[in-house]
Length: 474
Ligand code: GAP
Image (tube, rainbow, N blue to C red; front, top):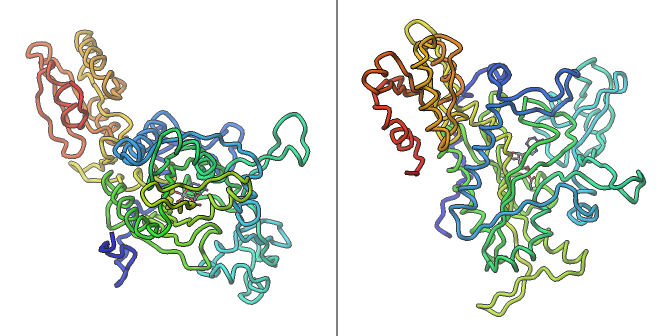
């Protein structure tokens, strides 16, 4: 693994490819209109930074999570899964360093009392972490409130963990946290998983689940939320091999986004500066994506050293060392972590798949989603919904398909409109039943991307679609 080229090198910097969609609003309105993502509690005026996934969104996000699980667990012999609780013993978060250090720099306007994350204020975006902790920084840069130009306070650290109480008494002793990362559930189960699965190093534990952060300035739709989902994998390794494993995971994780259709020009690596590193990290590289609002983190890859297991071992007195039978050594494994957001990944796939094309003088909106990610794989459509035999054949075909894939029936518009609707939600294939189908027992199958139409006999439709969708079932 020593011959792996340094994938972080960005010299000369790649030219900015520009975003796939110029305005974020295009994706926000498509999401609402077509049922991907809705504001939470909307009829009550909404709640900031929480979003609900509609009928199509839940399919897309489930498909993203499935694709990740497939790559990280199903197709690997060295990684197993876990589903730990969101609530954990509160001491976990003291030991992990989150109680002391999981914070962002907050400033408050002295006139309107609005609060801002300092590093998101105009003029402060490129400050180093050291500068962000400097009490004199606001005055020195002359920063003012972006809303009413009021005087801003000196920065103070704001802890991002949500707190609640366990049991019927709301006292300090009953304090618990909503986990801000899923990783700690993996560390505290390290010994349970290793012993029960009899894994030898190097091996990994993967988990998908909710995480919560009381972000100071959430925003950009589902990019930064207060309740979100993570897809995290912790790879336990012999200490001196950690750097090599870190280098090996970087291109693998980038390739996963490319495999599912993200334009490689809109992905890049960015290494964290030493004073930017999270409290647990020895080294961190972000996979960044060119969002409509700039290059931003999509996934983090971290060398966490023995920070987590070492601290949990010290705090609990439990032995979390690994005994290497081959060498007779005992040591605390180091951890290489790949930490992705399920929402951020789904959002990225949605943005990157969006296209507007001119077709016969009209604008066609298409989501060119990878078929594995598309909410529906096929729509079965009647050319004439007034002909009961056509509708009945549609239902028969759909019933036959739905055991293997998400298949929908729609007859609520003319065929042209039905095609456009399916294009806009990324359905790879449409099957149309027409009058001829009743005679020749064949249907028209239309491809979303090329818009090509082929005639396929009814008894071959399922096989035809399974093959093209790469679903391997008889
Ligand atoms: N265990 C390490 C960890 O949590 P992180 O860089 O803080 O690392 C990992 O978070 C990923 O989780 C991010 O790359 C992002 O995809 C996702 N994520 C973090 N905060 C988020 C938020 N407020 N809303 C949506 N996704 C978030």
